[in-house]
Amino acid sequence: MKIALMLAISQLFKNVKINAILTLTLFATSLCLMIVVNYFSDLARVDLYVNENKSLYDKTYSMIRTSELKNYNFSRIYSREELEKNVKMHRFISGNFTNYCAFRRGANPSDLIFGGDSVEFYYCNESFSDLILTGRIMGGRSFEESDFSASSLTSAVAGFGFAEKYSVGDVVDNRYLIVGILKKGANYFNLQHNYYPIDMDNIVFTPLIPDDIDNVNSAFLIDNAKVVLESREDFESINNYADHISMDRFNFANQCELLRLMKSDDRVLVGNEIFFSATMLLILLFLTFVFQKLKFWGRMSELKVHCICGSSLCNIWLAEFLEIAIILLLAASLVFVVNIRFLHMNAVAIAALIICLITYALFCGLMIYNEVAEI
Amino acid sequence: MSELIKVASLTKEYVYKGGSTSVFNNLDIRVGFGSFVGVVGVSGCGKSSFLKILAGLDLGFKGEYFLNNINISTLTNKKLASFRNEVIGYIPQEILLINDMSIADNILLPAKYAGLKKSPNDYLWFLAERLGIKTLLHKKPTELSGGERQRASIARALINRPKLIVADEPTTSVDDQNIEIIMKLFREICVDGGSVITATHDANVSSRCDIVLDFKNIK
Ligand SMILES: Nc1ncnc2c1ncn2[C@@H]1O[C@H](COP(=O)(O)OP(=O)(O)OP(=O)(O)O)[C@@H](O)[C@H]1O
Ligand SMILES: [Mg+2]
Image (cartoon, rainbow over all chains, first blue to last red; front, side, top):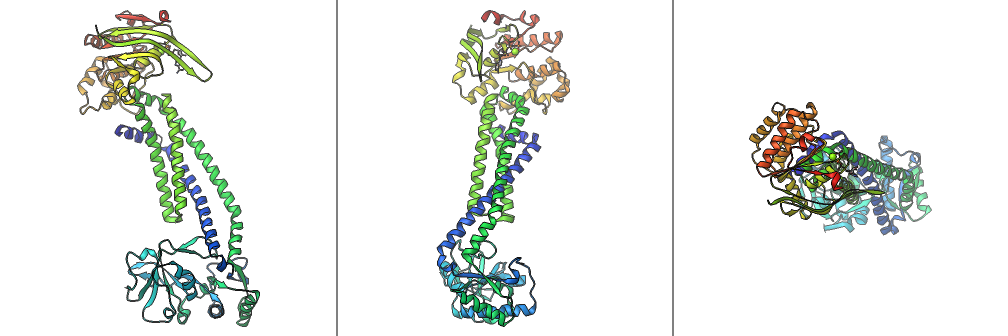
């Protein structure tokens, strides 16, 4: 074993270039495959989620300003006047319909500290608490009416990630009172601009207090509104109010419809992605095949020497395979680093990666086995 | 005289896609301890094939091969490897040395595989001295002449003091003076109770052997 490892490492360095190319190709291929798998499993999740909540989502609409129909701009800056209109509109829709909305608190960083850690805070209104949070509570409760009036302590519902550190009833930073903890892995879909699930594990929800509303970034009030509307008259009454306060009129995007549109928008992209991954896979297998043969021819006489001097075939097999194993390990670590830093893929994608690597290892193992039999 | 090698109805056939070459059929050969055996015959008659089997590098044969009363075919992969390491010293026809190791390391490789705590430097020096490669030990194989490399290959086969030396034309690129030296070394091994089997085209070598197997007759 020790000899095999030494042999493997010396071989690895003798073919640095080839091995580097193989590692990078393997890395790129696994990443592509993971992205595809990640996409499909996210899609399956959102489909399942929407179907489970179909009665609600069928009647839920996002509001899109007619001026922004073509090109939505995430970082649009609103004038003071427009911001005031947003607040008015928010009050109108919340007063007349069910409007459940939650959005990331975008305040200055010092406001995002929770027990000494910087965390993600989300504002949510009462309807959101009733419709989304209530079903996901593990301990304690979701928000009640009394939580939505200003007081010295702000009520907070924390994701499962905080369950180890805090429990219901704890006061954090002399400012937040934890009233509830969410279930592990709780998530919801904000079918506005993407359909990735929003993982609630590491989010702290606080109430969007109506009296405080002037202090929040009011652009989010409309962008994240999810309004339950029954009929065309409801659309009209909202737009009439918009006319009344001389605001842009709105288009109403049904959530189920939105999902369908986004899926068909993605079709070409996903098709390309699949094609690209398949090409990468073929290139990888081809390169591996050629390089493995090249490496083997190059070191054939050397391996013969080892055989003559008393190395067993098993040892040589092991050494060859260890070299591949090191390549696999390198590629896998690269994927993991990239994933953790930038991508945050789901468990299904990681399982796909592991299956992909194991299959690759088997492919190489078979090749090496045949080669070593040649000596 | 007890036997080091007993070969019974040994048959070798190379099988490849779309055909096969029969090299030899039903060889029966016995070699005692301390014998110096020559193997001669025209090119392509199967000398190397035979020696590879004797060296435990080719198990694809029919018949039986006992080395030191042990049936080679029954050994596990690992046992066979340690047999090659300890009992057999093989000098291949084409000179195989690892190019990025020094000559000394090349020669000591079998000792490393044997897992010796102390590398047999005294014996290395002795062999290098006898074979006239003492000043070359620190060099890389690519810096040596063909004859020098061949002598290094011989030294490597001898370093673990094996009972059986299997030499495949060990003197092809060696001058007469060195042939003399190598023959003397081989003879000493036989005197010590080891056996040497060498394939050769050189009458100078075959004339010094105790027995000469002529593969032409065998076929
Ligand atoms: N790996 C192989 N596959 C198929 N045939 C082979 C293989 N190795 C050798 N042969 C054939 O077996 C026969 C014997 O070859 P071998 O190398 O044993 O001859 P040799 O007596 O050592 O010749 P030389 O004196 O030239 O070294 C030859 O006809 C050769 O073509
Ligand atoms: Mg030959």
